[in-house]
Image (cartoon, rainbow, N blue to C red):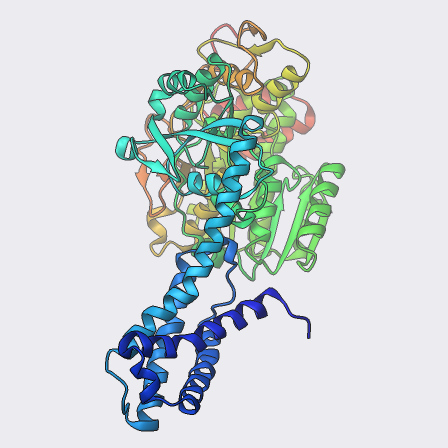
Length: 632
């Protein structure tokens, strides 16, 4: 058997145990110990003590730690092992000779001696290694990039420890700024907390006086208020510094102190971040687990994220419905890699094709349907209104009716804030879809299927979103185009939006009192709206350039169907809280199912006949609050 370091440490500990009993007796009795216990008896007692030690140390898992990183946890394991040994040895000695000639203080002395003999070498070894690293660190400190940390918590401690433990690390922490003032003036691993994040310019100046001016500012927490991140980004750019962030705390811990840490750039999501919503994940999992799930628009930005998250909740099978062959292929291949054992089917299908949709539903027999397929680019739908109405309004009706025919337990339809007081065909078409699903949910004839409608605003990075446009314009060197200086929108990340969609769906289906939620719309709480021009400036700063100096911003004027401000509630919709934080309930004006069905029949006929005037007239009837923006 090959002798490993673990074996060497075990032998060391047994050797220390062998010294312990004679040493404890000598400390208590001086030379009299060897008169009371002749050599042969002392040898017998010591051998028994070592055997008990071997068992005790193994039972307390004392050999999982590394001496180089000896810590409080290792000390606790040693204390447990030594205590078990002393108790067991004392009991054995009592059974052997009723503790004859053994002073009552001997077990306590032995306990203290053995703790010192076991813990001392471990912590001395760590001290020497740390000392060597400190000397190496001091000798090479000039080669490391000085950095300032934002956040005086666990992540800062882990980062500093990792930098000190790795002789090849790239960074040297010269100071810390806390998020609050509670730790100002204190130290984390000898690094001073200089102030709060509000004191960034003053802290930089103070460090510069010490000839320790940082070159980089690092956010240590993955959930920092977006407004603070935006301000720090602006300040660091003005000071000629780079703003980065650490990986998530779990990833940081997994990396270990002797591994390198890759800093991450600040993303646009960090700038808009809101406090993480606490969701009922057990309820979400119970909603999905073991059920056959079908997702329309499965290759789109929202649809593909739905696929990813739903796959993680262990459905019985997934059916991916998508009109774009390439988009369907892409998400299907991703699922093949990430969830190879999950039964799934990739079905090419257009929600406007009623016969194809019914064929898919009859074949796959889904129990839950998430309807994400839609045309959502406002100017393009304005230019192609009949296709927008066919896809968003008639297509949603096709999916809803197929759900009833197939006996689906619940359909979750994704709507948009543009459906509130719409000024464009896209928003009005989605409001028509909302009306139809509301009517289906309220009608007794369709009570076998629950229709849950979820409304929210813009998601970062989604198809047609302004963020990919800005990224493309930045790659091309600018300018960034903004339609109006006062244009505002609500934003959330795709992941957060989809999590809330699933949470709302599980809540709608699981609601004990169906009448309380029946026919109502779940609205995701979007926080505060963001000015698009501010978003543009922040994205310019993210790439280390200066807005309106290095990269110009050009105002192009409102496009057809656009309005300056989006709303998530109609004026007559009183938002009601739900059991899930971040999800509200709205009760828009309901429409009788027979009435909306007849109007959608007229709409489909007009759209397929190419009669734009008739189609828009029907749209005005269903959505009387629709109005085109002034000047359009």
